[in-house]
Image (cartoon, rainbow, N blue to C red; front, side):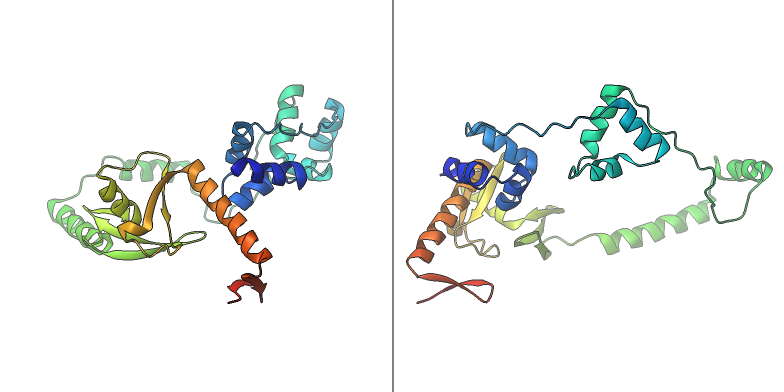
Length: 246
């Protein structure tokens, strides 16, 4: 199912890996790896013909940055590409200098700087002062420390998740309950899917543990199901929302 979706997005719709990543909710590098894994041949990157003299003129004489050079040639997010050409041609970066920059504030002589350095180096606090500092720090720690069992709702990019303080640590409640259901800790790469799509419903029967690629396939299947429901007229798009027509 994932192969068909990726083939449609990349081959038929000719979307870039960055656009596919945005649709799938993953990073561009992950989208590129998924294309490779599913055996979809990626398009060759567009080649640009730069000469060393051309880049040196833009960089040294016109005083353009690498990002500005990339923008000039219509390369989106292409500062990294320009940096590769700089490395290939052996073009050295301009030295950073604070000459001509104005820094507000009082000028301090070297003599005063040395006195300040000696004052702050190795200075010992008196027992009374030390005790007062520790008391103030304890008060700050008590204010910041979250009590055991405290529940908060975290707002992520797409969903809201419940966070609970367990054993003094912030823990996503759905992951904690899923691990208890399985009788083991979740391993790296395992994700928890809410079956009814309510991220605040953390009943064990509503949680399904999947690896990242399986989770993506499940959501791809959901998109296909939604497409079928729209074709049958069961679900319609109205006022910027998907709603059931029955």
